[in-house]
Length: 366
Ligand code: HEC
Ligand code: HEC
Image (cartoon, rainbow, N blue to C red):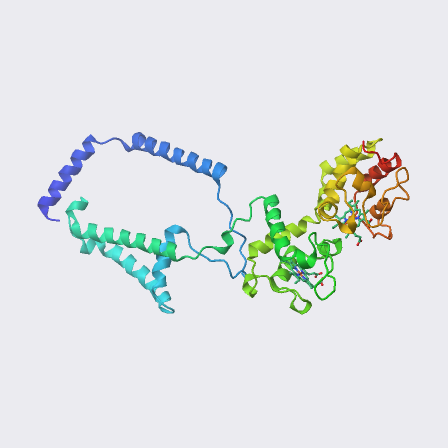
């Protein structure tokens, strides 16, 4: 900068300063208002919008495609142009070059003008850099394959269990039964039930996921994990396991205070009604195997069928709970028609006693 330029600049600076406003409190007040507005906006976004979590990190998940945040995508893309070992050189080399460039800027850019229009070289260079970053970002986005994990499998536990049930019915029910009760294989052998307390209590979710991922090749179950040539992503396997876990839910249900209170209520009902008290229990605990699908040809769809259907009728003897086959089964006593119902876990004592009272009072359609 020569003397004349410097003089002109200092005068200009003085003028501007004379007409300007005070930093305190004028500028600070403006800043404070804007920061407050941004803060409220962020808070609002956090509370009302939020961002969905990505699935938990999992080192064995080969289907996950890692990508940096969007504002780093351009560097990510840039590094793709340096093959193999050169990438490490590029990471350090480019960084050092940029830092040196910034340090050197005051030495090689001696142009005293400030307006972008008066600085064609610098402006052109910066425009090129910004365009280059935009180009690289777009390039990175279009070359990213769709995230296999991004399929919508629901956010709430209920939605995930529903998604899991659909996948289970499609891939597993054939060999393990629609309710995990076990099924006959082509070889004629039966699979052991997966919905039994035995199985559910002795397998962590991670263990079950692993079994599904690798399969049990020696026993006739293929691998289902993508990494082992199967059709299912880790997230899909996780929701299937969530669905399987729900088979054990009645137990957890019975432990919360609300359902304990509801059970205590059942114990107080002296003349149970079929529609109001008995049917809801059947609907909840038996319908999965005895409404649409009929295990042992027994249906709890309505009053008549509850009394009269089944391969080994009668299952209910009105007025005589103690000799009713259904009650024996609820209590886990072996009968010609089978053992414990539901097979994986008995009903609560209060529920069984309520059904007994209803049968002893004539098993009416009341
Ligand atoms: C072609 C038949 C077949 C299909 C399909 C199948 N499995 Fe299996 N699965 C088996 C066999 C056979 C076993 C060996 C254990 C047995 O016989 O009970 C087994 C074992 C298992 C076990 C371990 C059981 C234990 O007691 O250790 C789990 C868990 C399991 N399967 C879950 C699934 C899930 C979930 C699916 C669906 C993604 C599925 N299986 C699909 C046949 C199959
Ligand atoms: C997970 C599936 C499942 C659930 C849930 C279930 N059952 Fe069963 N039920 C079966 C199977 C399987 C049979 C066939 C008998 C056998 O092989 O043990 C059966 C048979 C029966 C029979 C004998 C039918 C006949 O005449 O042969 C009765 C009665 C019965 N169940 C009642 C119930 C009741 C009541 C509930 C609910 C409290 C219930 N079951 C829940 C699977 C289930």
